[in-house]
Length: 137
Length: 137
DNA sequence: TTGACTTACCTGTATATACATGTAAATGAA
DNA sequence: TTCATTTACATGTATATACAGGTAAGTCAA
Picture: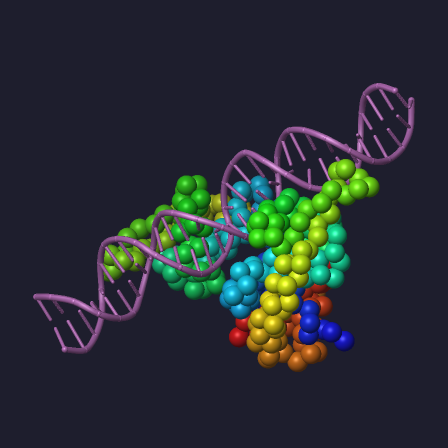
């Protein structure tokens, strides 16, 4: 019937709220939020990203990045350094504390991830990601 | 392969951020946010919901509801009334202004919705919703 | 009827998110 | 070289989101 009248934004957003609560509940012993975990994950693989690149890779608006990094800097998880090649740019580096906390968080993340993907076959999870990508071009 | 190591929360959350920007951009002439539009939509169909019921239906934490309703009250879109049967409860009612603005917003919403579902067949959209639901039990 | 318990809502606080705008630095054309 | 333009980041402001904890009201058993 009216399937096209179901708001796509609402469907994805409400799922995001529920998953955020689930993952942040799992991450609670580390004090990391879902966004903070995501940023640490990106820096673990590609250290020294610029703030704008982090936004681009993770689909955050540029102006959101300084706000997300602030509590992470206060906790000593990352540091912002000037880019030696361009005084406008900065470089975000994960600290050793950040690496240690991320390693600890990974085991907790796995619990939430397992619980989330438990009821999906690998094919379904692959298809879910493909459909999510299609929603945003 | 590594498909199970892709964070489900990140996949859904980043899609939610992108869709939120798309829908709020479409709704901008009305000044409505995605959450406000969603709440007005629920009230249009079921007027007089309690705050806690709104949270339950839309997957908001209970404590988020007063914060979401505040700007809507200031704009005169909804009003909170005491529940005559239970002094603890309240009843959220959409105003005529709220109905008028929602009617105007619907046409704008449709543009974002069309653009979003454009590349999906009805079957794919049905499956996407089913898979999203599975992620949260 | 009283008192423990539960329910419903709100507030304090912190982070998340993004738009509009501001500032400094780099770039590139005249 | 100069200056308009662009790029990169930050800040002001507003709403979003939820956890911890608070208050008032309803419930129910002793």
